[in-house]
Image 1 (spheres, helix red, strand yellow):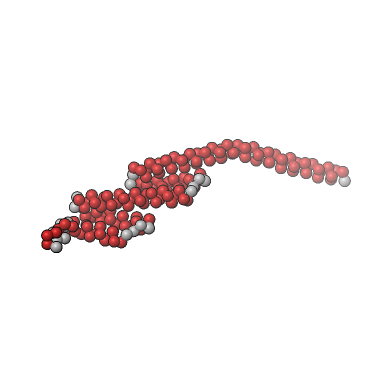
Image 2: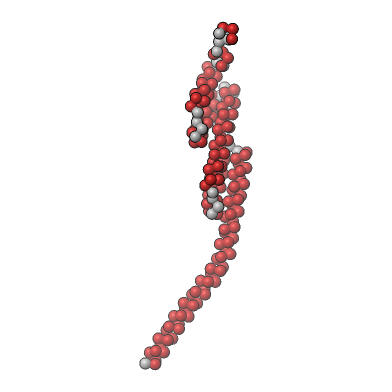
Length: 168
């Protein structure tokens, strides 16, 4: 029996040695991956900060579509870095749409002055869509702007439509 017991003891010792060796190798791999994981985490956070800076700059200097792209890039980078804030995203989106509404009214007026009614209408429709997105759509203002374009297209100004003061 001692030889059978001896064989079992040798097999158990060999098995424990293999388990110990495997756990040591895993521990070493984990310690090697940890600096890589930290470096990747730092890189992701740096990219999120950079994309946030680019978003803020784009909101100041660029138009709606480049702003929308920058917003989506920041959102993706912040999610990857684990720093995404839904409230901050909503605020940036609101700023983007408010800027677009303002820019759309300016371009509407410029194209009316240039008598480019097709592009004026594009600006008007953009204004309408983005005010609806913001929840600030005003049907009366939309109708007034539409009428302004119609009057300009037909060559009438607001002064020509209303009778002179002495005729009232």
